[in-house]
Image (cartoon, rainbow, N blue to C red; front, side, top):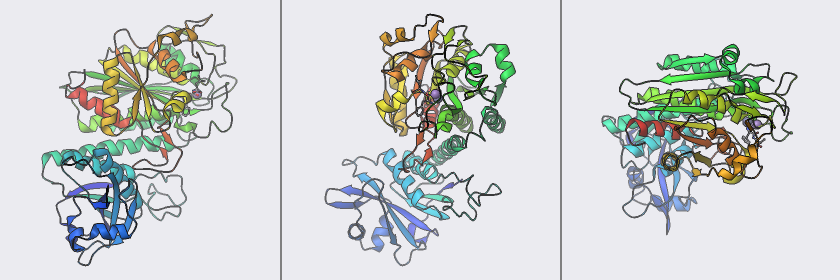
Length: 512
Ligand code: BES
Ligand code: MN
Ligand code: ZN
């Protein structure tokens, strides 16, 4: 894991492998961003021209490397594009800094230490730069050749080791707010990266039992109470949804409850995550071409897990309960059939028309379990529908809720932390499509608006009067394309930062 530190050292004297500076896209060519003054001075104020000569424009994602000027103790200058210049008198946008920092950290894989001389107007900028660096430096090498003895970085054949240390220059190491920003960035990024690891771990190594064990260990380490219901406990408790989805697998399902409490907490949030460690579709088997990335179907549970641990590490003054609904969806002689009726934990019966609509079944039980504690709000996170990917693409998650104000609050929190999100409706007319002649409800309805149908199904399992929001992260959870900004290929950790922000806002009394 990359280390994050602060330094007031002046750029020329600092010993590092590289110094990262920012360059913005101006009307008349690249503009050197604040933070790079020492480098610019070494070029007699002509750095922008040098960068332009090298082809730099300041566009987002752009990297320009140049040798450091004489007298510097860093051999390399890495100029990273920040995108368009901020409006007059405005500060650099946190997300622009986060992205640029991530791009630079990625470009510096293989280096030991890099100094980030980007614009640091305030503590928020320090946090954004730190977060971008830690998230951008992420790599998943556990299964690569030579990644032995738990040290993926040593002697890697297939790639470069992640940047080992990121130093944020211009920040004040003794300033309380700057220190807190680093602590927050470190806790959130480390837990988010752990969620990415879980998503990237192949499904033959991460089954429900293994996931539960990881959660158990992390909970112990961070003073979180943990309770794991195994298949016997689930049967005894009547969790027909989780059991029905898990029944086809040789690996039994689990329901994990993580309880973080703070003595000064005034509010209680519940987070519920879909944790399908592999989604084959079950008897309604997915065709080839649709199942290769389905190890990512536990991304919601990974996000919930990471957010609860981050909340604990940050000592937020709010109670947060995380529910991980873990099962593997497989076809077999013991699998749930299309046509079967499940009796859910809430007592409702569900006719399973399509075993590939399994996420809503495990979530239904977890939502009802979460509701029994009467939290102030419930937020579930799930890679729930392909329909949401069709609607919003693969970088934006959908937000549905039983309360308009809460939906707006969740959307705003997401945008604030740099997670693209968009509000989606729960149209009442789509409910009747799930009417079943046999059971209380079917697990499928109209094909059109499938993401909203799934949301309407979940709503039926939220306790009366409880504020609830549903994040469908099927698009952004897993990046099948190339890395961008601070987002790697593979598991992205989608949802984590929004959940942490919601916990913070609830703790400070700024949410509901
Ligand atoms: N896990 C999938 C949804 C998904 C699709 C996640 C693409 C990530 C990327 C989910 O369990 C599923 O199969 N949903 C079905 C529901 C349908 C059968 C009603 C879908 O979206 O096709
Ligand atoms: Mn499915
Ligand atoms: Zn699924």
